Image 1 (spheres, rainbow, N blue to C red):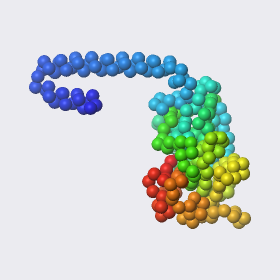
Image 2: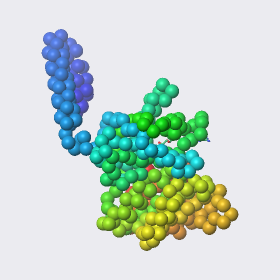
Image 3: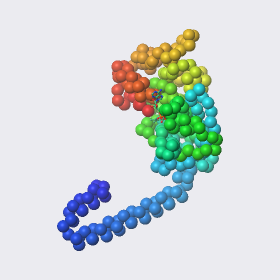
Image 4: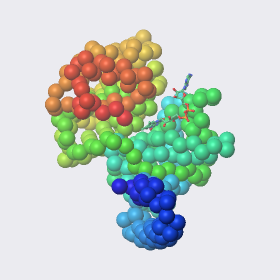
Length: 297
Ligand SMILES: Cc1cc2nc3c(=O)[nH]c(=O)nc-3n(C[C@H](O)[C@H](O)[C@H](O)COP(=O)(O)OP(=O)(O)OC[C@H]3O[C@@H](n4cnc5c(N)ncnc54)[C@H](O)[C@@H]3O)c2cc1C
């Protein structure tokens, strides 16, 4: 039982006796002081532990990270590189987990989650890929875009329910839209470059225009390096006239043809705008995918 619940029960019980009330009061004071001392000791101890200091991020406390690089990926997508406070610190973000960024914008504290795209053993820095929304939207992304090299942002993490284990499925079927590519790219890059991995990956990636396809070169070069392990299918709703891949929004035929029907050997990962992920769930259910066959980032 929680201490607070226990106290509530006791205070109801003692309301009729002033002596018992003062005894309980002293007891409460002693217990809270003791707990406070214990917490202080624990914090002090953990702060000096080597493993604590060797990790860049803390899941509970926000830490400050300096922006050291900024790159334009597509007209409205930027890549930001943030340095850990020590170059040898491990950036402790497992595959598919996200971190929270925090800043004060127009006098208000604003927090947003982002998926770092680095391999899980990244040391010294991490990269986030961010879509910059135009005003009046994009409170946080426009703030990030306005930062100068050397400015600092606070982050904490990792967070998230996705747990990846090496070779946990024979195949991963990925469906991404826009910046929903971030967790997929991180997984693809890490899995294909891991010599102990055998997982095959099929990615269906939706965007508006050809220009909007994030990491197209990197994805295509990985697909030609690992032709039996990575299959790509791009879907555009504003395609150029010469376009030979998917047109419109991702539909049942695209999924059936590129990912197939549900089976015990495949897991589907979905990441994109809420309307897209909702539509994908309906299509996936039609193809037999249920509950644990699908993970929505
Ligand atoms: C687990 C998780 C991981 C994420 N990882 C990433 C990541 O790696 N990269 C990334 O870029 N984002 C990521 N996001 C989204 C990110 O957290 C922010 O939501 C995003 O950056 C937008 O925040 P913002 O403050 O810039 O925009 P906000 O001020 O919150 O505005 C954005 C909102 O405006 C809406 N909007 C934009 N344009 C229009 C329009 N014309 N008409 C109507 N509505 C419009 C959008 O639909 C969106 O909901 C992630 C989200 C989650 C939940």
